[in-house]
Image (tube, rainbow, N blue to C red):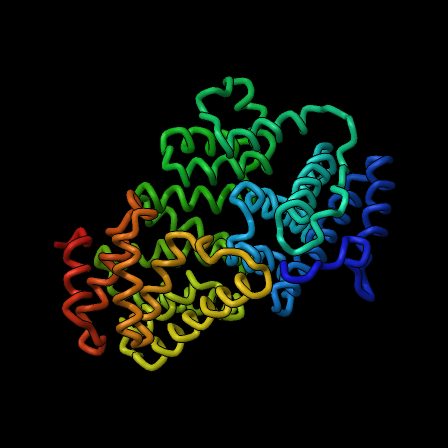
Amino acid sequence: MNQKSPTTAVIKSANFDLDNDLEQLKKVNAVNAVEAIVFYSGRVLEATSNYCVNQLGEKAKSNVFANIEYINDYNLLDQVTRHWAHALRRLANQFRHILKPTEQDDGRIAIILLDMWLAWLVKRSHLIDNTTTPFNLLGTTQDESLEQFKWVNQWLTDKDFSQISQQQRLNLQKQPVFASVICEELINRKEIETVSEFINGALSYHPNDLRLNQLNGLLMSRTGQLKQAESLLRRLLKQVPNDDETIGILAGVIKKLWQNGESEKLSQWGKLYIKGWKLSKQRNTYLGINAATYALWSGDKETSRSIAAQIVDIYIHREKILEEKLNVSTAQMDYWDHATLAEANLLAGFIEQAEQSYTSLFTDKAFNGKPHDVPANQLAQHLKDPSIDNNNALIELSESYSSFS
């Protein structure tokens, strides 16, 4: 960074002091006050994620999900830390909203996850003085929860799921925090048979767990069980309205149903994406680009252009923050960031920039092996709309990489 950020000793406001909260957390941890441990851990996550967002030049949200994802938008969070940050957020929410019973390991797991988050904050976030002494909330105690966490954490980085014994799998299925992270990553890795067996086992122990059910809906979507997924996700959204993750997964399912010929689904998936875009305070570019797409395909070119232009501005702003404030390379943008930016340039009417973005997306050696057919198919669909300006280069790119050709 160009200037040193404050140390953790001054991460505080009128209502929060990190050093004090950590001291209080240690006290309730010493007497194993499970509910208090989880609440304090969630409070620290919320306050420190607020701090990170503020350091990035944005006003922090009251929604911790939005704060974590805002940090992730800058690709400052590695995938493993992101998994655990959301796991702690969900655990704290479950206690706050009484969505699960108190279990004896919950406090210990909250401490483990918070320790992981604070280690990232101090050592790798670029948002705090990295000379600050790392926290160690775990102490020297070794227990089953810590051993399970260490295994899952290592597996997320470099292990094969087949290396875990059947007994270990059963133990992990009984722990919904770990089971959810495992299921999400197995879905990401497209290990469908393994995740199907594992998630069914986990749900047999925790049939009402929100995240496990969301992931079951996502799995159904990935395996073509679209009607079953829609039914499950609509039920979840009714139980927990405005849940960001449920909205995103459900919208994707309904969009697939529309693509399969159910024409009446167009407005349904579109309205969900627009709702999600608004709930994210116009931050989530995935929801935004789908909202812009819906607006275009439903004939509202003006709204489509407006949302797409906002998305382009978001990426310009991120680039400025990364380079000028954090001195971090913009090369950290991932493949889907580049794909979203290319599509946003097209829908906003920035044709020259769209051509450059799509050309880089499809030809850059760094993106070899990426699923080019996904953005290329979307590009081909857009180019059919007479209101979209285009050129021969864009047409050639869509034809070269689309699975429609």
